[in-house]
Amino acid sequence: MKLLTSAVAAVIEDPAGRVLLCQQSAGHRLWTLPGGKIRLGESPIHATIRDIRIETGTDIQIIDLVGLYQLTGDGCGDDLPDLLVHVFRGRLDGETTLNDPGHIRRLCWYEPDSLPSPMTATTRTALRDAVVGRSGVLRQVQRDPEPEVPEAADAAEAVAAV
Image (cartoon, rainbow, N blue to C red; front, side, top):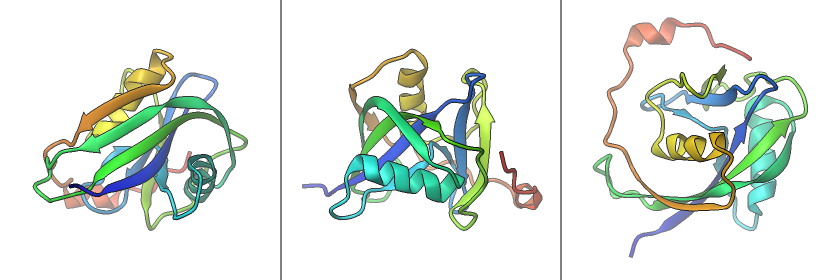
């Protein structure tokens, strides 16, 4: 039996309809929705508010639940636990700033039809649901195979604050 880890993420749109994405600092530098793991005894809503504040420097208003996404599979070749991600739709209370540079490399706003890559499978799936206005979705998502590591020249870029 596989272990199950719980996490949260938020689809945050600005008034122009762009979505906020984070590029991870470590590993494959995947693009993902802002969020993180749920701590022991913590509710998914509290974890979302905490993680968004840590990553963006501002508070979030939770609007609704886009869905629950169970990330499964061994696409990366490791025996990783399944991950249950609570994805909320939210609105920021202030301006974003890169507030967690050890964990997040960049925060950027993107048009839904021109998203960056590589992106996590959960982020791609949840964004598709959110952009068309779905709420309360339940989906199982398969992990992607391990992506190529970005070139070192890419590391010289300045950290982009939004």
